[in-house]
Image 1 (cartoon, rainbow, N blue to C red):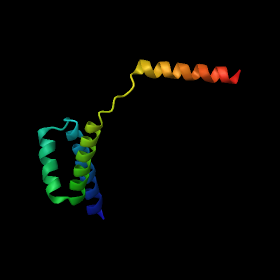
Image 2 (cartoon, rainbow, N blue to C red):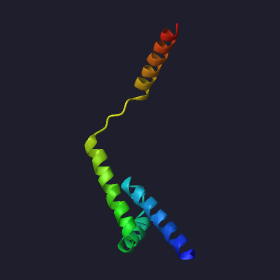
Image 3 (cartoon, rainbow, N blue to C red):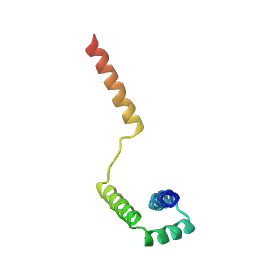
Image 4 (tube, rainbow, N blue to C red):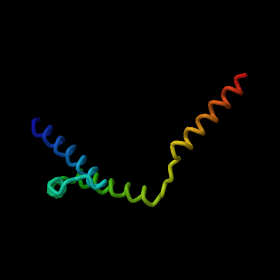
Amino acid sequence: MNTEINISKACEKANHVCDKSQYKEASILEKIKLTIHLAFCRACRNYSKNNKKLSVTIEKAKVDCMHKDEKDALKENLTQAIKEHQN
């Protein structure tokens, strides 16, 4: 039972490093440890593969988010419309 707990913690840590690596926040030592872990762990290899696919898909989507001032203006317009509708 203790082995199962250690394995899941190792995988949890590997997945965290995988996420950090995706955003170029992982150290070289973390990347080396992740590479070694991925050589032995099929589940984490799948996680890493899916993580890469998600990143590529998001990059291809070229999502343009609304700026804060635009959100604030939209919120103000909505609030005003609600007040007018209530009267």
